[in-house]
Length: 556
Image 1 (spheres, rainbow, N blue to C red):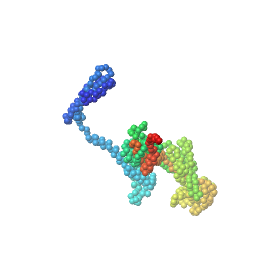
Image 2: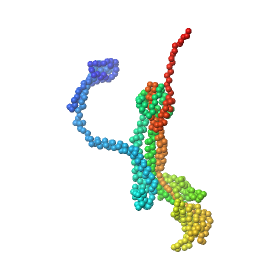
Image 3: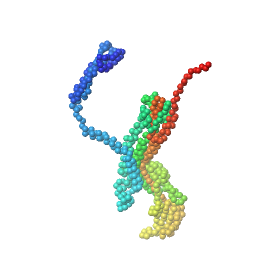
C-alpha cells in the first residue's frame, strides 16, 4: 500500500510483482460532523493505493484512492455523555483507597515501633517484679492502699489491669499485636521494595553516572570482560550487556554479591513474629499445676493441671495416672541437700505402665506434651515402732523458722491422751537423714537415723525409727508455644548473622580502551575501597604490539 499526500505523483515502489492483497480496496470518505462549540479547520488527505494481485489482470494498474477529511475539533457528544459525574462518591472512594496507605505509613513508623518494643519490655519487667498467679489476698497484703508503692501503686492497679497474670493480660497481648502489626507494615512498605530493587539488574550506560558512585576508578588499556572474570573469581554475580550474554545494551557490566543480606531484615522480622506468636500461644494455651505427693501415692495429671488462657485445650494425656515409686535425696559431705530424685511410673486408663523414669532437678519427664519437673521436696511422715508395736505413721508438719532452712516436727503422745494437758515425745528433722528426739520436758533425748533399727528409750517408752517418708514436689505444665519460640530464636540468630553480609554492587563501562568502574555497598563502607582496589589491580592490562619494519641498510 502506498500512502500519498499528493496523488499526482505516484512513485514506482511496487513495480516488481508482489502479492499484497487478494481483492481491491474500497473507496470511502470519513467526514466527521463539526461541533458547534469549537472552530475547526478541515484537512483533506487523499490516500491512493496501487494494488497488484496474482489472480487475473482485472485489477492491474488501477489506482484506488481513499479521501479522508480530518478536523481539529472534538466530535459531538450525545446527551448521555455530556452529563457530569458525581464528585461526592469519587471523593469518598479516593479517601477509602488512600486510608490503607496512610495506616501503613503510621504503623511502619520507626519511632512508633521502638516505643512499642520498650513498652513490651517494660511490661515484662513489671510482670517479673510482681508475683504472678497468686490469690487476691496476697496482693491485698503486698500492695495495701494504706501504704501504696511509689505513693500510688496498690492492689487495685494489679487486679484491674491484670498484672497478676501479666503475660496473658489484654494490655500485654494488645501491645504484642500492635508491635507485630508494625513489623508486618514495615516489612511490606520498606523491606520488600528494597529487596525488589536489589534483585533488579540495572546497567548504567553513562560514565558520569558511574563516577557518581561511592567508589569510582578508571582503568586505561583494560577490557570489561577481563574485569568480569576477576569479579567472578571474587564471588560476584556478573551480568554483561554485550556479546552472547544476557543483555545487549553495549559494552557494560553489572555485578553484585551479598544479596542475602538484603533478605535478612525480612527474616529478622519474621523471626520476631514467630517469637511473639509462640509466646502468645504459651500464655493463652498452656496448662500449669503443682503437687506435693508422698512416696507411694498416686495422682491424675488432669486433676493437677489448670488452664492459663482461653486457648487452653486438654489432651488424652490428661487422663494419665502418675505413681510415686520412691523419693530420695543426695547430700553433700557437710550434710546439706545436693539433689533430690523421684522414681515415677505413668499408667494409662487400662492400668498399663506406659513409661517410667527417675527425674531430678533439671532432668524432667516428658509425656504426651506434658512436662513434669522436680522442683521441691517435703517431709511427709515418720514411721516408728512404739514398744515393739506398729509401725505407726506420724505426720510431719513444717515449722516456721528464720531463713531458707527447712524444719519439720511431729509429736508422739505418752500417757493419757484424753487429758487436756497431753504430754509426749517431740521429734524434729531438717531432712531425711536424722531425727532429733526430745522428752516430755523438752530436753534433748537423743538422735537416730531412719532404718538404723537402733531403739531409744524416753520416759519409759521404747522407740525405733523405721523410716522417713519424703514427699516429692512436682510442677506440671504444657506449653504448645515452645517449638515456635525456639524456631523463632533460631531464625533470629541466623538472620541476624546474615544481615551483616554486605550487599555490594559494581558497574563498569567500556569507553574505548578505558574501563570506567564504580560501585557501592550498604555495609563495610570503609573496607569497600580497599577491596575494590585489590580487585582492580588484578585486571590485566592490554598491551598493543607493533612490528616496525626497518629497511635493510647495505654497507659498502
